[in-house]
Length: 318
Ligand code: GLV
Picture 1 (cartoon, rainbow, N blue to C red):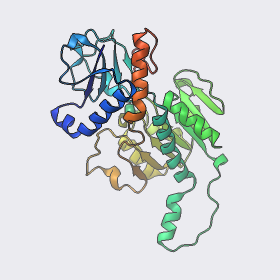
Picture 2 (picture 1 turned 180 degrees about the vertical axis):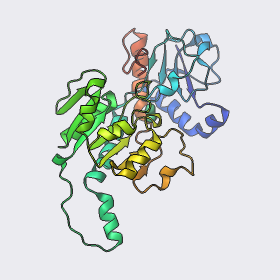
Picture 3 (picture 1 turned 60 degrees about the vertical axis):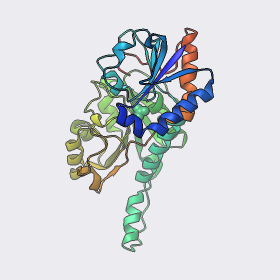
Picture 4 (picture 1 turned 90 degrees about the vertical axis):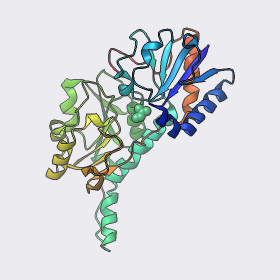
């Protein structure tokens, strides 16, 4: 059994990512030193490859891999991979569901939820002006967090925040039972969900249904003065609608980790906007040391014809 490791869009990117690629090789081999791991483009006889493990693979390569048992992607989101027209429909795709990545996502959400709840920026501004203006910060129970998307990561965020004492609602396509979290389902309950939300945390997968979902209509239904945290995908946010909602005061802030164009262009308005926090897509970065455990376990499962963890539903697109 051979495994092809395909990381990087082209030679240039592979060079830049060489130490990350090496970390992946080492981490996968640490899980199983017997793995016949082959690094793209030196895959040898392509018919010997049983699994391909990919991250930012070159576009259009997949039609060659007619015999692989699965494509394992090293990302949580699969939108970029699924946009590759060379994918063969009969080959399953498996994504990363790494508990350590989920912890990173939870900690990111918590950081910015607390920043909003505890009005950190307000106190810092007062300090700049040596201004001793005491006022009661928001109490946790007076604000509701609405997690959009209750997949592997969204559910973890909702549960973690709820266990910490926040009031948490969630919204997902299909009905879910999550202890401590009030779940709204489908398009019918979307507006109701928004109307109860002070902090909207987006962890939706990017699909045709969720593209542009953070738009002026959505913002108008959130509670006045709401904050949004986008950890989903940049294409879910209509940028000019966000700017307008911040200007009007309908939203008081946005924390954005993902963007339509990444890296965010140097002259983009978001960089200097006083109500926007920009982070460079770091809410969670796949860590080879932790994620390799799942990749190798999934390969072993599939060799035994067992279902892998994190199999993508190709009809849903996530
Ligand atoms: C990051 O955004 C990922 O999809 O893993």
